[in-house]
Image 1 (tube, one colour):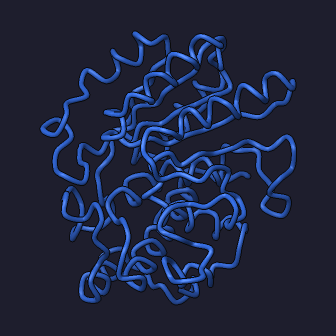
Image 2 (tube, rainbow, N blue to C red):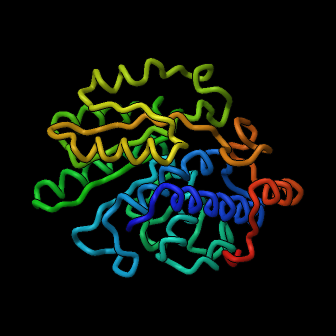
Length: 279
């Protein structure tokens, strides 16, 4: 998939509209972490990854794991726009019988490679996918997004050791470093800094970027592609709730959807409407 920076920025803007609209309709879900990660997902699905929505299971496809599974609205909006399923499904988020539950289900949603939600497990799953591809001689690359609060989980660091030990260089991890988790500021809950030094100590190639800047994300992905004999982690400094003033940088919106008034004001602010996206 092609798309230059301006096109990708516009896609990310439209996806932000879809995210807050579906969350408002559901009256439930995670706003902040979905919005902080959407620029990364935009670059992956509309520029970087070798995928075919018409053939979601093609053997040589690249794979993505959303380890911070509560940011499912971001993944759902991305998959719908990419063509994995009809955008009208977004209106069913968190409804009984919907394929779009509060966390991604690989048995229900086309394009979802791993059911996630229990924090700390996504990197281990991505390790397995990437190592299997190497053993098979397949060109597959595997990408994973973790939360910064998720770095407090011990399994993350077991997986980090494993990826370095087996030189899994077709693995690229992102840390969505928005500084906030459900209970408050990450550094006050359980400090994770110096994060880049920790990943380097575990043998990873580390890149630090502004994770809401499309150009920086693309440059980091190119660098990760060129890195051999060790995995890459991209520490992406982001803003929780990025894109809308009502929720930007506010811990309250970790798991709170926008009200009707907030949605209306947010759509005016970003210059968009939900109507074209059938939500």
